[in-house]
Length: 191
Image (cartoon, rainbow, N blue to C red; front, side, top):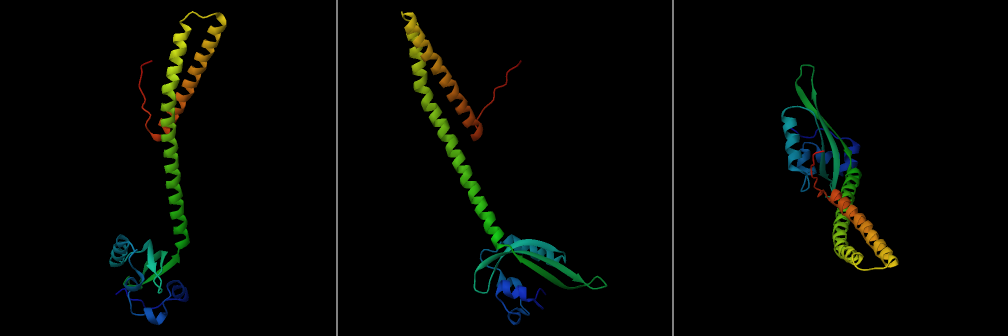
């Protein structure tokens, strides 16, 4: 019937319930609560009805009302004729592991947001830098077409080449940020 017949001291330490308090009661009636996943409960009930083993992670509640995570394993016990006599449940407190997993997940999300912000910043800055740089290069090319003495032409050519090198670097940064943000589009060309 799913009623507790016996529990050990480890159960008492973990749950805060004494043996006398739990005998004849169903564990789900006093251990499960608001944060206990309904799908996990349904999965356990299904396994018990089918008389099969189940291993599951679930939130239970201590006698003082505080939630904790357990790794629960329930196995059927059969007599020599194959008839179900009872179930044995074992549980391990995994609360600290779950906290660690949650912290790790939050840190991963924060890192992904920071990476996205960096990529968006690089894309915006690359665009903002390219616009005036194209103006500088264009003006240097116009100046190179005017009457200049050899020394002036050398200065203008150096300015134009430096601007083109800087523009190529900015374009590479923009491509890199597009790759990171998944927005890079490839063109196919026959060769």
